[in-house]
Amino acid sequence: MRNHQGIATFLLFFLLLIIILLQILSMIQSDRLYQRINHLGQIVERTAANAREEYPEETSVTDGVDHADQDGWLVWAFRVEPKTLNPISAEAGIYTTWIAIPYIFEPLLTHDYDQEKLKPCLAQRYEISDDRLKITFRLRDDICFSDGVPVTADDVIFTYKTIINPDVDAANIASQFTDITAVRRVDDLAVEFSLKRACSKSLDGLPWVWTTGILPKHVYQFHDAQEFNRRVSDPIGSGPYVFHRWDVGKEIILRRNENYWGNKPRLERMVYRFISNPAACIQALRCHEVDIVIPEPEQFADLVNDKQFKREFYCLSYWTPWTPFYYIGWNQETAFFADRQVRLAMIHLVNRKQIIKYLLGGYGMEISGPFYVFGPQNDQAIEPWPYDLDKARELLDQAGWRDTDGDGLRDKDGVAFRFRFMYSNSYALYNRLARLLKDEAAKVGIEVIAEPCEWAILSARLNSRKFDAYIAGLGFNTPKDPYGLFHSSQTNETGLNYVHFCNARADAIIEQAGRTVDDEQRDELYRQLHRILHDEQPYTFLFTRPTLRFVDRRFENVKVHKMGLNYLQWYVPRAKQKYK
Image (tube, rainbow, N blue to C red):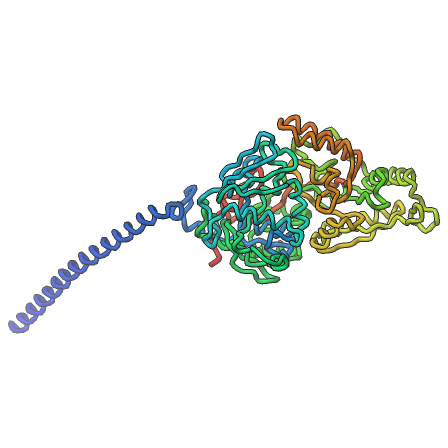
């Protein structure tokens, strides 16, 4: 019995000894592990400190946003797939511009989102000569294209010369540069533009020139212009995003330029997915397959009051100074529309109140001219012409267009009043407006032949002046300079006065406004021009409407600025990110 107790005591002592030894070893190991972790932490801290010193902008986090919140994607639903990502091309429509500028290609100047003015981008500053006929831009010295090559004056000059090259397929863009007589290289970082007419102090008279994306000469230079014309993909610029991939028929993807010279965008990718059907766009948004949709007006009207929908998506309706106006242009070189009375008759055919109510879901306003409805150039006292079929018939009779042969169509000098009506086939609204015009015109003895076509074809026909009438939208309002659209000198094939509007009084006012520095005096001159345009009707000014957007609420910092939405400020909190 005593032996059994001694063995048990020995085993217990031995077990306690082993436990003590294991504890000692554990403490030693923990101490070594702590030293290793502490040493590793010191290395990481030193590395991070060195990185902050060498690359301060890349490691900093703006506006208190966690760095991990800057890796989200924004997936657009685009109704139309662009035909090119080359901004200097006749086929570069609005969707090309939305993708390419300023995300891939950057301009000399860009619009400030919170103020209606231009501000420096690639240009650090600019100087205007005393006679206001020369502008010298000084480029920043710290900007490179995404391939690492610095941006210089040679790239600016190359871009300009490419645009005006008659062999380059970009006549519609070149027509916006007719006021530039020469571009001269001052030095590596300075370029001087010479103008036909005096510019304003703010340069807002020629915004198309200063906001055109600059192309790298070393990438796009060519010996044969057709070589340039054929380049539709793989764009390279200096912007905050770089081209990643184009899956034709499906989507275009841009990824963040990690070496961008300015403040890098928070979103890591911009994806433009092509969904042509408006209903399918909304369905994709509801299923969270896309993040932002440009709805049809009636879609917006249907969903803006849906409480469940609004819990998941922002419903944005807003006005900006570059909100487009929609119009019908009448070619005054044709037998039909050379007469002012006929043009007045045409506007009396269009029931704009019904268009706004039923086709726009109430989201729109009648207009009487081209200026921003809330801007100082717009004459608020002018009443839009009314819808009045009897007045239209009276004016047509006075103009000599009567049905002389009893076939139901008006005619004059042996010519039947039958005209072709062109419009871009990518907009459902234009198809509906064409049907409406056709029906109303038939009531007064006019036949309208609808001609839907691709934008490139329409643009070529407009430039060659081979059309009767067309419908389009134009974001004219921000420039505040109607010279290109309405001055008689711009009726040639390089000008924007497609409808051949020629009015000596309008010319004089436009020219005087171009010489006027004082904003209030210039605005009053434009109000006088507004009255002339209302009276002469070179265009049937239809309506303007707010910009409409549906956006997934997982995005933060979604703000409506004076000039619209700035997608470069948006981000997705880490917990809500879903793409990798």
